Image (cartoon, rainbow, N blue to C red; front, side):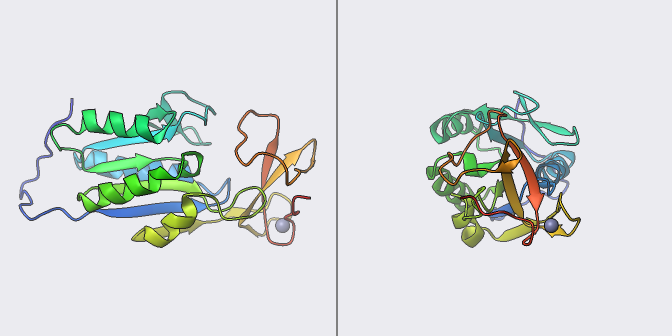
Length: 205
Ligand SMILES: [Zn+2]
């Protein structure tokens, strides 16, 4: 049940929205940071709603799950339309303050317009996504959000090969760099991933 947030000094001015993007390669802690930010708003009784693409079935069906086990309840959605429909129902009284969207690169490109619309309406949108795909090219949605977001945090990982700072995600199939003809989005578990630095990253062939 969504209830109006109750501040001692209730804001009467029109709310200003914005977009926060948490990006970087895999194993950088993006989802942990995402959950931390959503929890901060929950502690302050801001109304938070969170989504994640249903394509990402790692760890948990019903909650955003990070590699270290912390979770935040969210709606898994198969499409942007489904996300919008759930949002409209949950926000029927216009009481939602914060919208979280995890793994934004897995949704179709209309999600960026939806995020802009939410921020224009005075909501805070907190979103995460990989900045590069496994070929080290810019990932859809995140490429535009890097420009549109008011706040961008680009997190780094530690290279699984050499221990230096890692900024790229290496997709491996049977221990070798994946083919450049592989599909961009693959979460079926037949492959594995490593965080790699500029030197250790192997370009897909
Ligand atoms: Zn390295």
